[in-house]
Image (tube, rainbow, N blue to C red; front, side, top):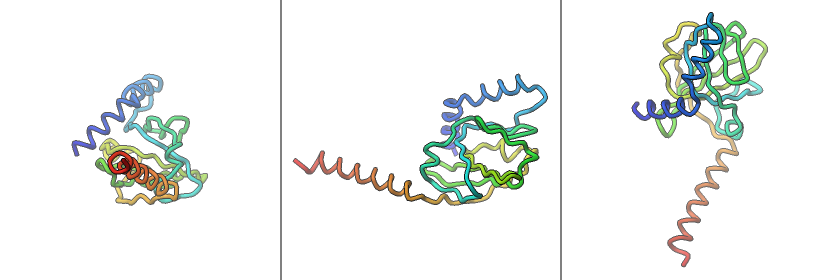
Amino acid sequence: MMTNSILKGVADLIYCTERVRRRFELNNPGEKVLAADASKGIVTTANQDIQRGFHWVTSQRAVIMLTTEKIICGKWTIPLESISTVQFLKIPSLFGSGRVLKIQTKDNTNYQFGMRMNPEWTNQQSLLLTLEEAQVKHSFYSIFARLLAVGFIIYSIYERFFAK
């Protein structure tokens, strides 16, 4: 749990989460921010499973905020009344656990937002979220990148200690 708190604090510091929240609330006095987090977000073509891949490398990185009226993340604004389904998924990671907020809108736009654990999301009452367990699948790109990295490490060790 301590690792989750430290990683969330570092991510929030890098993304200036509290400053973004305060600025939004100053510019929108009639709207309260219920939850805010550093996030990576993607738009998918369908309601897809969570999968590691190149799309996360190029994902939009911004503060995601849930307000009394909408979800905002960078260039995306999703009115709460336009959401048809929402899932809040707990995913295992190397350092603690992460969360993925999956949203499908009534016009069939699908979003996935990855973030650190934050009780603000489950404690708020504007958007009904239940935490579900999930597994992350690996894409071909993800597997290839990992194999390439391991191969490079093995090669480096061989060159440094055994080649001469």
